[in-house]
Length: 441
Image (cartoon, rainbow, N blue to C red; front, top):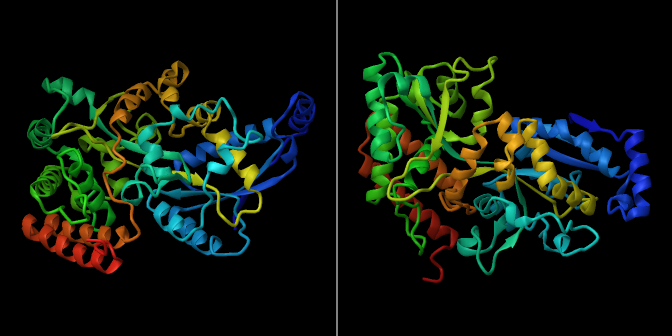
């Protein structure tokens, strides 16, 4: 395993020891080494830069096993089944929360937040972005994965994201175009821009077979008024809203840059960075690359706007969270790190280093906005972040793969949209039946 160890400096240890006499909550854990498992994403690369500050302030050492996401997931699948695990704190992608909690592999966080020796009274949980907490951290409420009276908190958002519209200010100004506020305007511009700028696509989107196509479909499904299931778990992705979402995706891909049908997130983003498309609708985590001259040819030319409105506003929620494994060896020290990283102080440090903030106050912070002028706009968009834009249930992986493969055929083989979605709905019903979702009906 590749471990990156952040060690406490002697000055930090001296500070920690001195603070003991003033009631230092970290003193009992000074000298402890906790092992964490993070992915190799821009957000967690930013975290690596600030971990030494945590050690300096607390005296707690942090050893990081940082892996590519899929390898991280594989490693966790092994580690979480041990009687005693190697990890004290893990990062997980939102899909995994249902799997891990269902398998009883994560600690409920209530006992930590109710412990006065551990819980910082100035943490201000109300400042955490509501949609992120609901999407990433809460399990057992409405539908099993949303907030509700039976819900519990098992993780905190960290490396979370929502959808935002990036657009070329210079192209829009050149042709007197209005930034789209509705889906009708978005789709009109997506196909109008290639006519105004020959060789340029209108909007760059994910579309590759599998989860990329599903993600892109869901991106439009929620604002256009659709869902995958109704309140009784009946598949409804093939209703009028579902057909409208798939039609919107096909329009975007047909009017997009060359090769759009095969784009994943990286390829769609690269097309925008290379000036091959005038708009990009996807995750906020992409924003950090736009003004990086090493990656972007559109530095200083990009504006940001909220995800356009269909019948309602509803931007995506996704990304990563952090949790304490049930089999962790240093749980209280791990909680202190979790709390520190997502505190107002820690969130700002990580954001200034290039990470994604999880607090409203960080998005509004003047110093943050001086460095990243788009953050206040992102904060406004987050008011509409939808934690129910996709179902986070144990069988979602199977449904996701089927939907993505089928949508790819719509995009590349002109498979009839209604026929394609009807087939997915039928197969989804069989999957849900087998999983027991209709037992009480």
